[in-house]
Length: 111
Ligand SMILES: Nc1ncnc2c1ncn2[C@@H]1O[C@H](COP(=O)(O)OP(=O)(O)O)[C@@H](O)[C@H]1O
Ligand SMILES: [Mg+2]
Image (tube, rainbow, N blue to C red; front, top):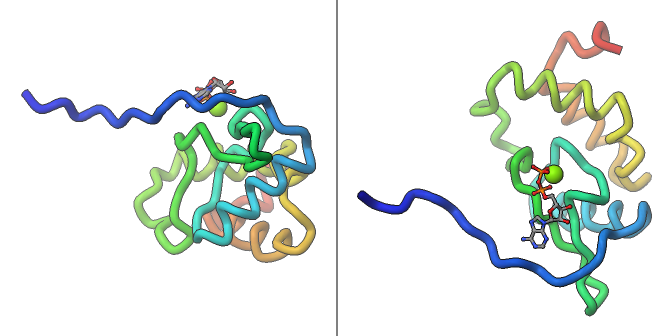
């Protein structure tokens, strides 16, 4: 049987700080990806200074929210309200928040 696993290489580096994590979120966003659980532990800072995502579990294409399961969408919105929002840089915060809340239209009620 075919090996259907996806593997990524081990990346040397350190856990980024808050500002560096925000940089990682912004880089992803400018490549049209969003991360449902933005936090330092889901990124790694390489010796070059580059901040790379390492946990793709809740990474999705901006324009492709249709395929995300309703329960997952709900978790993403809940995490965002709980603290994920603090890792979104100011310059993309408004559109990021709008996109996250559009995942779960009833999100105004979950806070
Ligand atoms: N490809 C990788 N290279 C280096 N470290 C990694 C890699 N993948 C995971 N890690 C380490 O493992 C930790 C947890 O990984 P993650 O993929 O976020 O798993 P989970 O969220 O399920 O716990 C990361 O914070 C990082 O320290
Ligand atoms: Mg993780």
